[in-house]
Amino acid sequence: MYRGLAKLVGMETPALEGSVEDEINFLKQKYNEYDFFFLHVKKVDSYGEDGNFEGKAARISEFDKLLPKVLELKPDVLVITGDHSTPAVMKGHSWHPVPVLIKSPYVLGGISSAFSEREFVKGELGIFPALNIMPVALAHAGRLKKFGA
Image 1 (cartoon, rainbow, N blue to C red):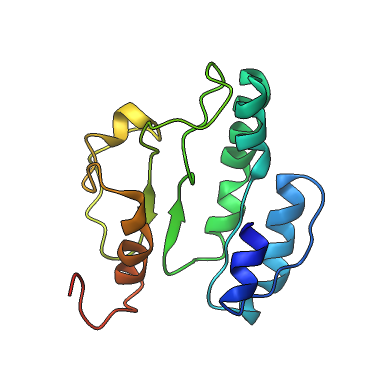
Image 2 (cartoon, rainbow, N blue to C red):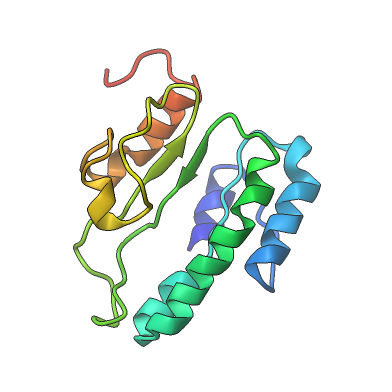
């Protein structure tokens, strides 16, 4: 689905198989060729749907350890989030909010001390509908003439 939607908006969609590190290495290779990237760590969702808490936690930890490689690229804006909550205990998608982390020159920051659902309730973004993630990300990238109109 993600690859199909990306194609509809004109993005290239290489078929990547392998680890999160393989995906980040590919990102590093192609970084100067594009101005927008979407990296999807599917196994986080898949393991949640399988009820595999340990596998899900391991994929998140794998990404956490590799995040400095992404930050070395000095992105103007970095958004880290999930497309939906998939608690392993439920073995499926749920209604729970997902944390959203945005790094940009316009983030005040310093409110949250961890990347978690409970900690992000206190963050400067608060709780907002997921359909607003792209407008907020585009605003942080300076890509909107006017926000909210």
